[in-house]
Amino acid sequence: EEREQTLNQLLVEMDGFDNRKGIIVMAATNRPEILDPALLRAGRFDRQVLVDRPDVRGREKILEVHAKKLKLDKGVNLEEIAKLTPGFAGADLANALNEAALLAARRDHVSIDREDIEDAIERVVAGLEKKNRRLNDREKRTVAYHECGHAICAAASPGADPVKKISIIPRGVAALGYTMQMPLEDRYLMSKSELLNRITILYGGRAAEEIVFGDVTTGAFDDIRKATDLARRMVTEYGMSSAIGAVDYSNEARANPFGMGPTQTFANASPDTSEQIEREVHRMLDSCHVRAREMLLDNRVILEEMAATLLETEVLDGDTMDTFLARVAKAEELAEPPTSELQRVG
Image (cartoon, rainbow, N blue to C red; front, top):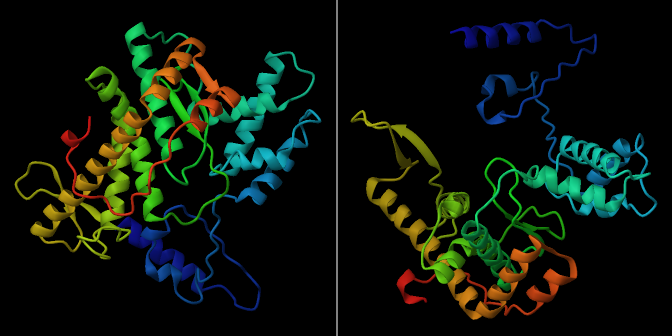
């Protein structure tokens, strides 16, 4: 095949270099898992340097580089901005500062202030405001309760990232609203209880719709997708299910032998084990869904008050939002989801 011929030619060329001339061959990839092992043997590409997303110190240094050509207000602290951008790559940081410069120019600011930068970060994270996408009153009310549901579940979950802002202004391609959580620090490990909290928060929007309207909408499709993916990883990759155990059953999409398209299977798993994995994923998701409903029922008054305020202002942040969320009752940590049915709650 052409791919093998290219690989063989590359290896021949590398083996033919004079080892006394100090020639260094460098290469980069964002898919190291698909590299041929022959490329990584001693004497070839035998030194691997991981260029990961920058930590908070790295983000500050990158911001300093890009800020040199911009006029920043004296009140802008790049260390604080770095803390507001966890998970940002260098290109994201450059884009945020460029967006901030454009916003400052449109607002006739003499220099770029903190508000310009925070609004630019929001654009990078959530997309541009879609002011021409007008929601009817019913949709707007649904989105308000949905987003407040996320925020209250986040406030009720022990150790969850704090909520920074809630908005029901449509943004990006499909988002009709969003709830922005801001980590206090860079994280490299997540506990089981923290992951269960994340799933619970994802179900907060759907749970709020159920409680308030007795019906559900398509607005939770992305939340459900993310929650399902996370629960499946917990069961099949992270060994966080006592029923399945600490065994790797990473997902693999394999061809259906009956010609009906791809089918969901799990690596190294028998058909019975695959069914058990799916049952365990459903159990975990159902339990977190129930937990989200319980949190919102316990804080129903706050949910109603928050949604009413959000409908008036379209955005909740700062002291107003903090005052609401400070009243939210904290739930107990959920380390192992019990066997639950949604009908038991509400």
